[in-house]
Length: 164
Image 1 (cartoon, one colour):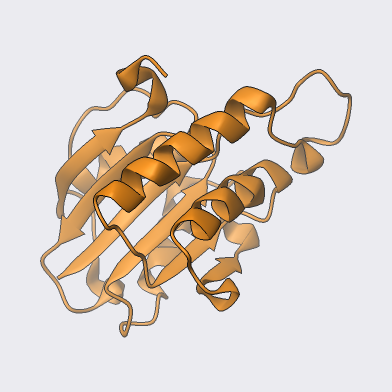
Image 2: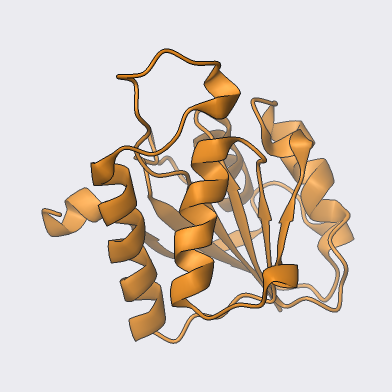
């Protein structure tokens, strides 16, 4: 069994003009990331690895979560293939994950994060909001065999669901 938590980065700061890649989180984004990290900690979620887009807003989201879950620094890796790429690229990244991992976080951007979750789960989501988490399980021992419509939705959570 493999479990993947797909996480969209938290709310970013549009008040400062900068390159998209370098956009940081705004205060609400920081608070939402901490809120979701607390929820994950409450349910004792502990990924083996977090694979993140290297964009500043994604890495900032991941750092908040990894710190709260007390993950070692080596548990966080970046992959440029998660920055503004199509869903098929996300699937290629998934299929290359080392099979020694059982629980994986993937952190990226919309619309791709929503599209890959819809494709893998076979469910209509519409939109994963900022700092939203969509979790699925796959009845397989190898990430390399994961395909469309094979993921079983475990939960879909996001800050606004809790009026946060």
